Length: 283
Ligand SMILES: [Zn+2]
Image (cartoon, rainbow, N blue to C red; front, side, top):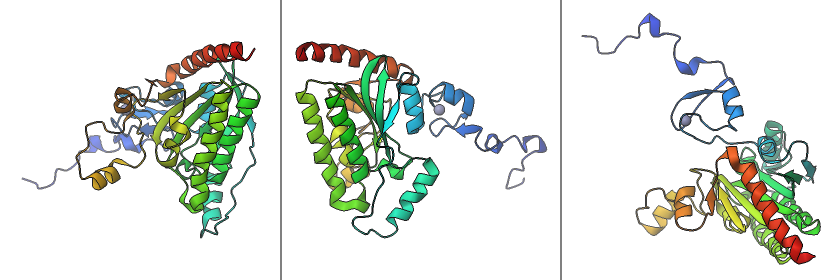
């Protein structure tokens, strides 16, 4: 009896991983092979298990903003290496080339179901969408524009946390964005955060969790430190589902979990509803 089972000729070449690069994606959750066209039609959600693949900033804009209404602001703000961190700018340039973005955040004006909105989208492909001084500045400017032009505000969050290459300058963005949000709230204007996989660190501890309405995508991971760090620090076993969107909704930290297919309609409804109220008060 042979020790190793020989693959029959009929099996050769049938391995699903052999499909041409770029046309098919293997779902990391259920291992189903999904073709790019189906993925695109479903906003990159697996048709079998509802796994949400990462969306780029341009894909988010297409998904959330009314067609042809997005107008980018501060597109040319670029990072400088204030602290002289070794190889930092080379790394940033590499990500710029890879993603076609100048920084980890894209901001601008748009309409969502007709509601005038300022939007900021974090793109996880760019250095894990870590928040450095440029990302923080772009978000702050988007918030201030929303306040000045009496727009609703939507920030789509995804982040590995503050950008370590910029040290304390990264952490300062937490206070800066939170201050701008307080002034936006004082003006009676709505702010919605959309938390996506993963939202962690300084972003969670500042603007990501300050929304009037906090929306999350299904099964996404939301936390400050990762589960391994929490477990090692507290020496306790973590409850099942710890730091998932569903767990946080159950514990009151997330207001609603939305599928990508109805994200635009729901955000638009909320923005229109809240803007109507705030503009009535302002009048
Ligand atoms: Zn799947």
